[in-house]
Amino acid sequence: MERILMSRSRIFAALLTGTAKVKAAWLTEIVHPPQNEEETTSLIEEFWPTVEKANETSYRAESKVSKDNIIFTSKDKPMLRAEKEFIQRESTLTEFGWSWTPCMNEVIIVW
Image (cartoon, rainbow, N blue to C red; front, side, top):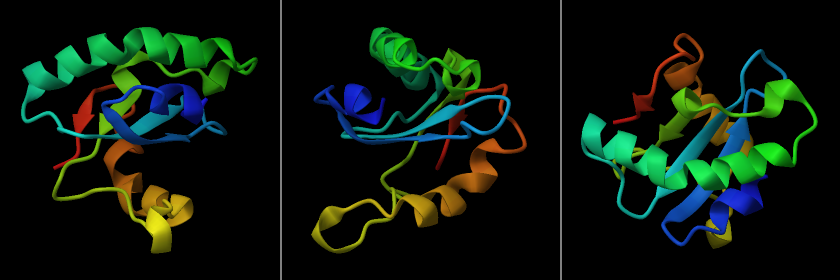
């Protein structure tokens, strides 16, 4: 699923999280992060067909991501990386965990 999202040239990195919970979410790092709610909404609409394609690959309902569970990182708070630019998945999800756990029903810009 992550490869499908990362096939978009504007998406630098994407992590699917929360698949063992009621709702999954995409933590997405893009080349030019949104600066306001309007830009966030526009990006979600732009990426939505790709998210739907990724959703089709999952047979588990809780792994399907809705529009309100797409989260963008910011330049000030990117995903954590190890040597050779590999994303440190567990550390990144722990670092950003506070951003989506308490409010899964709204679009969140991580500043």
